[in-house]
Length: 529
Image (cartoon, rainbow, N blue to C red; front, side, top):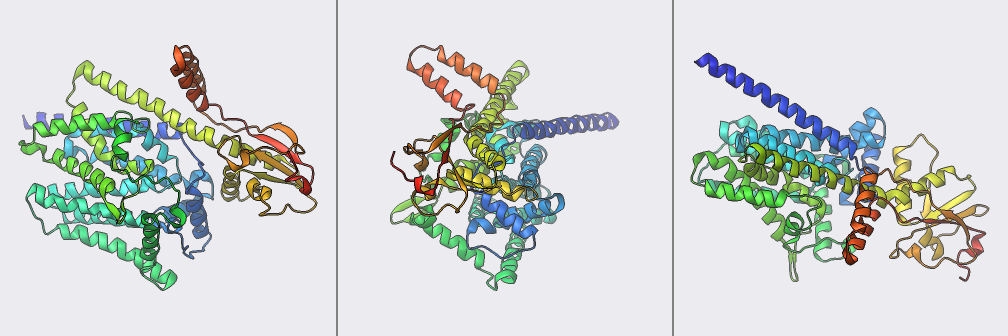
């Protein structure tokens, strides 16, 4: 009989291993197919800092985004190994995204069981937001991995009463300080654990020690580089004060502080998370029904993890006079993805037969479609900027290209990730028109006018500018034929709703064309219309 049980366990392990391998293969394939790439936001700062480090320049910046070394040091390492290409620089966020899926699918079984953990891994593998930030040169995927690893390892350490596992949990938490200092506030969620679970373990101090070790290493690095061990804390504090006062670089930035911001995106504006919010709520209801069951303690820990993070990063005040809550952005939602996926899996794993199959199809297929939409939105948003870079590369050296901010950023990014090629430079058309810069003497002037109505470059074009035609955009979209078909189908709907839906879908695959002009000479930059 014991041999039979051993054979059954061995078969279960083999099946779980195959399921995990298939899950990770799916996660990799989806992220490669829907790879996002350049967007034109904070990745410029991150890439610039990483490439400086790869070149041996460790001089710290005074901008907090340029000294998030938990992101930039690994990026610099991959750039040094494989060259400063976009794919090499993006390898760290990509690996972090895949690793988080793997951790949830493996260590998650100690919380909610093997079946639910694999389902949670599947939810993460196709989650539009998770897929999107695997292909972005941003800190969000590494940060999400640090948070998830610390919670998962803490629970495993508690189960095994394991000093090394608690230490690993602390090291993961400390690495989050290297990635984004302010987010270490999330450790406050752990303070509720002894109260809710009515227990104490002195080995938790090893987690605190691991965290202190990582933070101390970060402070030591800045002491070596600047002579000030508190350098990063001063820069981070200054940035937080700027946000609290809505001044400095944060003035006018859309960092929403509404308490319901994340709930709106998880339950109403579901294009980033699909059914993750409603399914997690159903999973929470399942856990509430079995709250007296000792086997449900892992699920209750997941509930603490999810609710604690959401409450902390939704309701924490950063200013009392006037009252202002902590900054919120869509990319920050990635911090909550793992625990919400585990909660969702608690509900889904209770389904059987056809109901389970239908639920998985309802999760996977729309998630992939939304992932394509997310990717196409970025591709369309950057299409004209990338087209401007290609135009500037083809033009003769005597032509100086001026364009919108997006084109300037795209050219700068291109120059960083293609250092061996001919340098491409695009200057701001708005600065030229406002006489903030002067065109180089003896060089032709090419102007790229942004079609966006809200753009300063989109104002009336002087009559003396010579039109050269529309800019050839670089779209690189996915499933554009499907979206065109959906737009045509929506256009058949009666009333204004159909036309609005058709217009929105068309915008996802067809960028508004930018226009290219030649300015005869510098005196014609501001000639009468």
